[in-house]
Image (cartoon, rainbow, N blue to C red; front, side):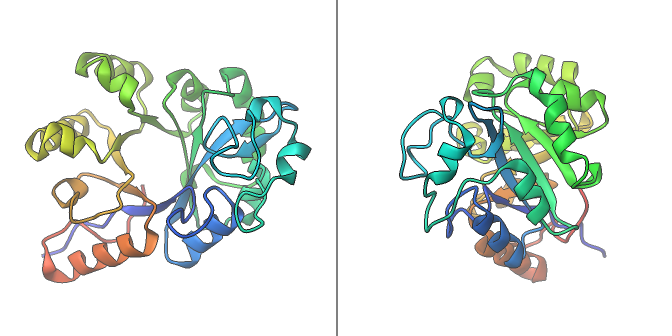
Length: 260
């Protein structure tokens, strides 16, 4: 009896558990340690450069302070983002990724608007094939441009969307028709495993694929991992080891490598 393939494993902001997040070091280490790809975040600087950083401020992740949107790229570049790592531009990251790497590119609504989408696509086009790329965001307006142009898009379900209720989520999904619904693994704790399974089954019946973030403990998420085609994790090696152990027979799993 054949086993279902395991989900793709993506390093969350690179290999965030061990290296400074969203740096070239973190991304390269995630791939070297076996991740199928990486997830990263894009914000825009004061001079219109697309930089790889999660927060709208640099305070948490660097030795500086201030809003990304109010700082020029040359000022951002002077900051230390951990161990001497510098903030990368989107093109730098793309050129550093191996050819077979999968990328989940999250567009951040704090500094980006739909008018940025064409410029971002121009940066993406020379470096990465659509089959190895997902464009994701909490903001559906940032995804519509890419959805219309045939890119894989993933709608991130956050606290704001969840607080509006299930009906609001369904309305967004039916309007946008993303290929992926990107769900926080914490929903299992909030909904309970039985209700989480029901939600995931419903989404799959509706034709959506599932990405789960941030899966750092495979045992805690074991009841729902089988529904996901992509897992995003801070703990690249631990997650891969746990999935391999599951696949090798300690637990009945739906786990071997597949394309998203």
